[in-house]
Image 1 (tube, helix red, strand yellow):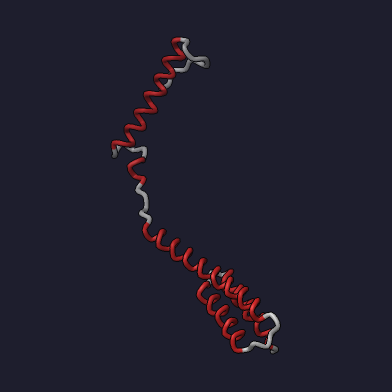
Image 2 (cartoon, one colour; image 1 turned 120 degrees about the vertical axis):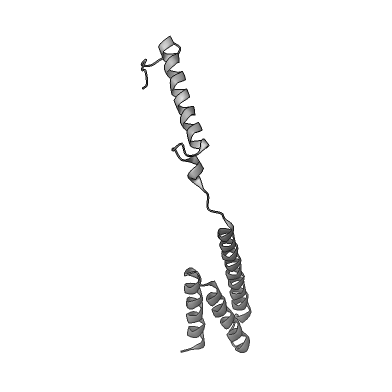
Length: 125
């Protein structure tokens, strides 16, 4: 395998690791490319290639920090307790919502019966 093919294979591996979310492995492959470029200075554009690889390492480090921040945020999120908003009358909140809907329905029905609102004049049970 020639040196160019070796570098290309390392770049492919690093890109594949990054796409799979294996950021630490991807960073290792990019660092391996940098060390290989440092030991072999026979390439024409070794400096430009090293700069491009360094930018990719910075992007991978940003992805690592983002993943760590996301993980720590998800660990700190408390699971919401929606039982207080249930429809049963075991909690005060559920009964209040039911009474509020019931009161609104009666109020609208009374307005319609008096002719204050257009629409069918229904009496709700």
